[in-house]
Image (tube, rainbow, N blue to C red; front, side):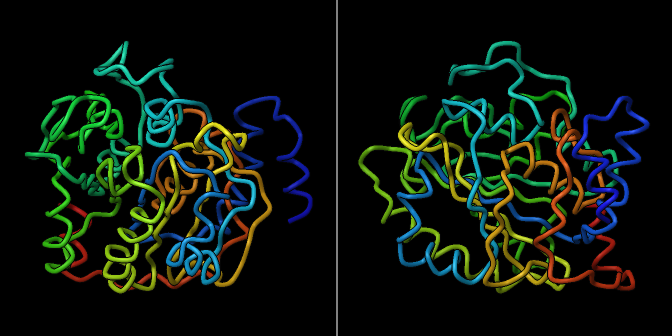
Length: 305
């Protein structure tokens, strides 16, 4: 293992050598049935760590002491998490310059592998709606497209972009897809200035427990923030949760949205998009590999929905 780690800490001279470096580490990442990703807004680790519910998550699961967003403002960070690239976007303009994008992304990778994905966004009016905002303007509306990067790609199925209310129904029916992104509205994610960190913590306390309670033995939930408030070097909180994750732990590894995108891809065994492919797999946060379960008709429906 140390030899493989040393290999990957040195710059790889070719794609072949890079693959040789990464493959042994990937074997130490468990295969997940379902991955849930919850994205909050515009607060540093220091601002949210003492909120009651969030502090409980930090204590119970694995969090990263050196987790960083890749830039400011919001939109390029979401693009980085979804596609391993900011796509050259440097602002929150809607639609983003250069879109629709044709490059690799997590949704496209899932679809190519026969895996389902969905994004559940609060205040999205209808499935697949491409509006820049609902319930307000494109800057502070409760729904803003800048937080929904999948909308900006032409190589994914836009019917998978769902109102948040669909998540409860999918959970109740046992029909959540392999990858779920959960996007609270701009009050619940603390984006809007009238909604502070306590509002976001209360939303997490009300909405995460049912999802955590529904996790199977091979499922993972990731909670992260898009960026800080501009005062902490873009140091944000990222927490990994679920039966596959080590409890009561902190990782000192430096990670970014690209690392998280890599972890999602590795867990689902799909190709990591963009710069995520250059990230070394997360191997130090797993409680142990779980044996694959036999397929049932219900599991096959989840996989191919």
